[in-house]
Length: 343
Image: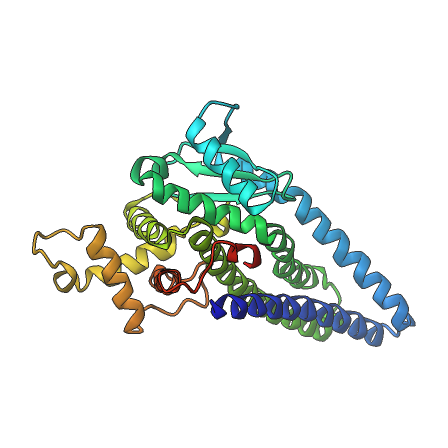
């Protein structure tokens, strides 16, 4: 299980890089403006303005994001006792994770998916698509629910909500400088600041996408060990990916928070279908669940998983391989019943 520690260190390093980049970016903007306009704000004053400006922006992002996701997902909150099995499972998993039970909601969406969002653990909402409840069995659904509870346990939902403001801030600054330049003598300064802003936007976006992929691996690991059933989550991911690949629905406001990304799913299944005959072991012309899962494993082992540095989620191929590794560790006694306390 050493890979879990590596994931944790990688997430921490990515966060440090994101906030470090933001700090340097704002400092460069201030220094350039002070030099260009012969300003006299000292370093202490700059730091105060930086932290105030960035803090206010992130606070706004943290405050409004849940409302945007709620509105874009068109979810319906469940009343107590309305869906007893789902309520019992989430309650049990929440107690196991030692976190407050999130509010439960259903999205009348035929795609098999689920996500969790909120300003904090106490105010979080776990949403399940009707497509997930219809297409997965109870063990697979339990694995998905544990995955979402893992996100809450790690507090990465709040982290993603806050850090996603950074590329947005860089983009807004770039656009505002371009729109705000009205004097010819300012043209050079405006271009330089805009270029810096766009570069920071691009780099911070890549770092946040990396963080998003890492948190999915981490939540998968939590689910696998907390339920003691990595195979069910592997099976669920295969079904989710295949189901999303068939959908014509446009990704909603919570795309980065989903357990499966519709855009990546279409790309991954397309690569498998190019070699359909190879994976169709029984020759019936259809890839069943087992054949699809084995195809994904082989894709990952052979290195055929596509470049994903611009994706919000790691490839399903790689996720299934990680779960396979954890399943082997559990089978060999490498993961005891309490190891999820440290994930």
